[in-house]
Image (cartoon, rainbow, N blue to C red; front, side):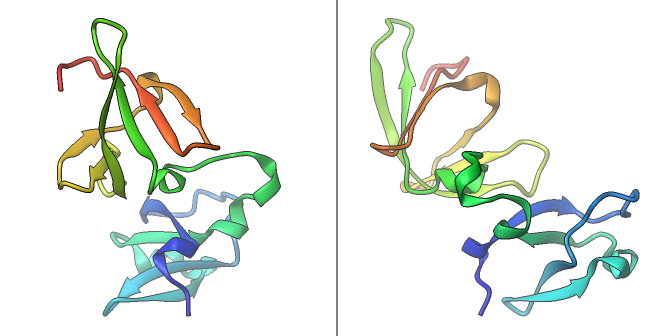
Length: 134
């Protein structure tokens, strides 16, 4: 069975624009991820679409997605240059234009490439500098 961990959101579906899409696009229905052929994307307009991670990235290519950060410890570089642990990333919400890290305590933090200072894959730490006080 396909789970959300196997998939990456590609956002709300509109039209294909002749993009190179994988053979199947998944849509969540009644808690399950149902595959649809990419050529039928017009039928799915307005729904959030997902693709298999393996369809868009090789494990060896070194590319990360926002979803790969689940389980990482989020640390913020304060104005004094000291690192402060903010919490553990429990979930990533990409359903809006602003990607959010939902922490284990329920707080939501915005994620943007401009905020990221370092990603330590070995220790599973995401170091950021937020432009606001935490």
